[in-house]
Image (cartoon, rainbow over all chains, first blue to last red; front, side, top):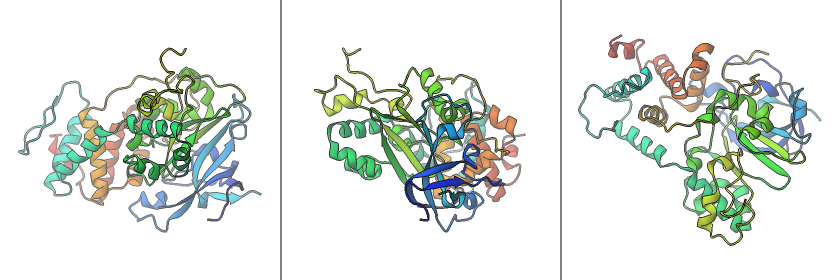
Amino acid sequence: MRYRRGQRVRVAARRHEGHHRTPGYVKGKIGSVERVHASFTNPETRAYGADGLPKQPLYLVGFAQRDVWPDYRGGSGDRVYVDLFEHWLEDAE
Amino acid sequence: MSRHDHDHPHAPITNGDEPAAAMRVRILEELLVEKGAIRREDVRRGIDWLVSRSPADGARLVARAWLDPEFKERLLADARSAALELGLDAGPSPVVVAVENTEAVHHLVVCTLCSCYPRALLGPPPDWYKSITYRSRAVSEPRGVLSEFGLELEDDVELRVLDSTADIRYLVVPRRPAGSETMSEEELATLVTRDSMIGVADPTAPAGIV
Amino acid sequence: MERGVHDRGGWATQAPIDRSEHELADWELLTDALVGVLGHAGLMNVDELRRGIESMPPEEYERASYYERWLFSIETVLTEKGVLAAGELDARLGK
């Protein structure tokens, strides 16, 4: 696992044709690793009949809502968390 | 409308109120059985499993956690193992993660990309959870969503929205309501609603408490 | 950046959430169970199910009910794999 709990990471802003599980609203955003999950099959290949191997490390990444939404109305401490695969993350420290 | 138990082929019975998809999927099942791709008894077993699922299982986990702090720690560390302790099936999803509401933190669960949900412990998700509006607004406007459900949080409570985008299914452990101190585990479980384990509501207040 | 029709987080909407619920109809339970059985049979996995749903034309995606989307996906993926012949289901339905 490349990233550790608490590490600042950026979500890649790349365009991906085809099935992937990185929601548009966090692409390009900076957050921090909240949890290091285990590794899981890669949905991007498994969605097209491949076996999804090798498994890819998965992380729960947290973002300050005010960093994600320009007009966010809510508590200043509010956060949104997304499960993201390692190959979508870059170090942002 | 009844389910059939016999096996001979026949024109599927349809109800005039059903969409075209109803007939279509029944014919699809027939075709797949004819081709030997699937067996009807496996489909039946799958349906039986689905209808056996309800929020009562999730509620038992929460009630036990409210009474037993060490169980709660085990639940938060590994919900699947904790569920097995109570003889509960956490389902085919590899990982269920329980997250705890506190005085300072409130959790709300969504799947913006589809409808991922801890079905084994909560039963099938409600229509609104799968709706495009909930999926859109739960991440960008969660306090507005909670208001619609009748839940207002203080400004200084940290609202954490969890978007289930991968193999993890999230279950909220809501806060134990005031006035429940003398209740048994079974009675406590009746206070734990499905909606409180998604995060759009608090658990039910004990009778007699406003 | 362009998004798939399914990628809804923060997609602008003022619409209130419709909180009415319905118990799953027999055909919906059947559709759900079919995906599970096809998964065990190695014929279709959950990632393919999602991918198939995401391939729906946007107007169809928005108009379809939840399990209508699943059915669309099952047909798409199984036809792709040759488990179903193109048009076979329609033919059986007499179309």
